[in-house]
Image 1: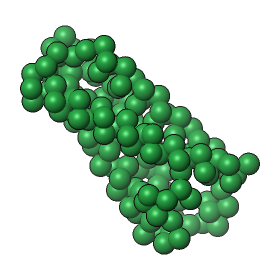
Image 2: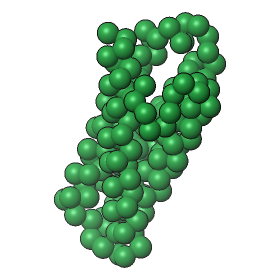
Image 3: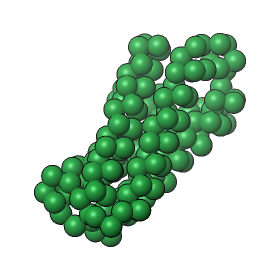
Length: 142
C-alpha cells in the first residue's frame, strides 16, 4: 500500500505542476493583456485547486504511514510537509479571492500572484527533496 501511494504521489505532482503552469500562464496573459476572466479560466483554476488538494491528501496519508517519518528524517517531518501544505493554502486562497471580485484583471492578478508563489514553493520543495535524498530526482517517479 505504501509503495502504491508513494508512486501515485510522485506521479500526481506532474499533473499539479502542469495545471499550475497552465493556470499561471493564463492568469499572466489575462492580467497583462487585460483580458476577460472566462469560464475556461475558472475551470482551470478549479481543477488546479482540486488536483492540489488530492496531492496533499495523498501526501498526508503517506506522512502517517511512511517509514521515513518514523526514522526521523527532518526534511520529511518538517520541511516537505510544511512547504506543501503552505503551497496548497496559497492555491486555495488565490482561488477563493479570485471569485470575490468583479474586475477580470484583478481576478487574473490574484491567480497569478498566489498560484505563482505556490508554484515556486512546490518547485523549491521538490529540489530540496532531491538534495535530502539523492536517490530521487526531480523528473523521475520515485
